[in-house]
Image (cartoon, rainbow, N blue to C red; front, side, top):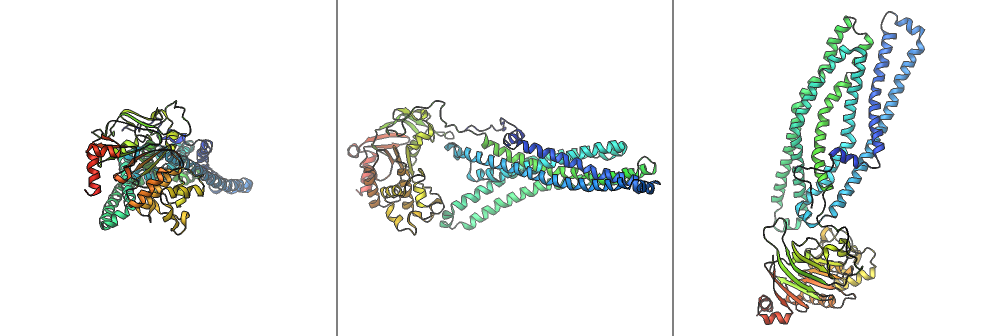
Amino acid sequence: MKNADKDWQFPRTRLEWLWDNMEGYKALYIVSVAGTFLYNMMQLTVPYFSSQIVDKFLSGPEARANFSAHSDEFYRLIFMMIFFTILRCIIVYADCVGYEVVSQGVLFRVRNFIYDKIQRQDMKFYSTYRTGDLMTRVTGDLDAVRHMIAWVVRMLVEAFSLILAVGIYFMFMNWKMALCLLAVAPLIFIIIMAFKLQVAPMHALLREKLAKMNTMAQENISGNRVVKAFAREDYEIESFDECNRDYRDTNKKTAMIWLRYFPIVETFANLLPIILLLVGGLFLMGNQMTMGEYVAFSGLIWAIANPMRQLGNIMNEFQRFSAASVKVMEIYYSEPEIVDKEYTALMPNRFEGKVEFRDVSFQYSDGKLPVLKNISFTAEPGQTVAIMGETGCGKTSLIHLIPRFYEPTGGRVLVDGVDVQDIALHQLRRNIGLATQDVLLYSDTIDGNIAYGDQLLSKEDVMKYAKYSQASDFIAKMPEGYETIVGERGVGLSGGQKQRISLARALAVRPSILILDDTTSAVDLETEKAIQDSLQDLDFKCTKIIIAQRISTTKDADQILIMQNGEITERGTHEELIKLGGYYAELVKLQMGA
């Protein structure tokens, strides 16, 4: 998988990435930002009209005369104050709705895109990323992205537009008083930047702690049977408690950073009314300021103090977004290594089913030793090839190369004479039925699980493939038959029952190539014999590649491959390998009780 490098050099910056994902909402977001500027500019209207009323009608020797002669102007000013207050409330409401619509739209778009990316990744991706970490990225991290759009940007625009608008208004009204008040702003900005440098790494660490805790919870919930089987509930509770405590302590440390800076910011913000009282009082006594101007300054002093207080929270939330967005963008811009070529081979919808390995070698990217070495064999259409060998000899790795879960590091894998790398992935995998020993069933009906590969499969066909896999008898005894809901991962079914449903699911797509990875290991010998007989009498032609440990499963195969240490050491039919007197012959003796 082609991830961003360790310095997180993405094609787009965080804000550019956000803007790209506002496709369809950009106009609304621009209007919302403009609305934020507008309703903050309207904050000036009430103090302005108040200063006019105070200077003309409430203070000064001519106040009574002005009211008598221009009472209509007095009422007009009162009306304008009420009108702009109501209008501002309407704009604020519409503006918040606009931000929320955009943020939810972006959240929906990015979450779908990320999920699509995750679904289309190759096996290397899933071995690199933990499930709990991926869940954190599509939930908590994406919520931080949404919060950035809906709240952080609005608060940032609101803070700077208020300070800018009020600063300009103050300068026009009384520049000396304005300078005295605004002198505090640079000091607060310096404090906020110092806070940013300390809190940024803490948010990144906090995010990692949360991912670790989610991973632990996910693993233990999905593995609850193992926990109970070994009576490890207390141990797992203690482990989660330690992880949760670690997350809590990191959260507290992050919060404490702001709490150390908050009193300083709050002190400077509270200095503003004191400066206004002292300096403004001197200006009033020196006739350098009117009472109306003082009232306007007093009415708008909060418009400078509050944004200064908010800057710390804004910076804190921005750093949370920065840490979360890196994790989201890492998946967003990731690309799988196993993809279709620009030009793929023209293949029929249904393959003949010939599988050929030509001098194939394979090694995992994080491994030091090769898993497969110079593997060569051919499975002709309709043949059954059995693969046997001790645990860890490379059997499963070998079959994973056929559907291109991994790419060989040497040699070629061919289907119908065409290199699998030249075949479109979707077409290749649609022609392969895969059933593994470790079965995953979805929280769905038995019918839905069997028809997973073909949602248009009729009920009659579902029953037919269940009969092939010898699952029909136990399904008929279930409370609701094929409509019985199986629990998550098949909870409530035995291992053998799950394997038989998995086999029915693999058969239901009528594959050209059927791959069975120890699929009957959990069923009894009688059922296994019935399954083998059914596989010989399928109503469609397919090549079968079977990994098994039982001689009863492999003895009728057209070709048996024995693997040891990543190499094929023996090959032939059941009778040929017995005559050879090697590993297979010893295995026959062992299983026959000789």
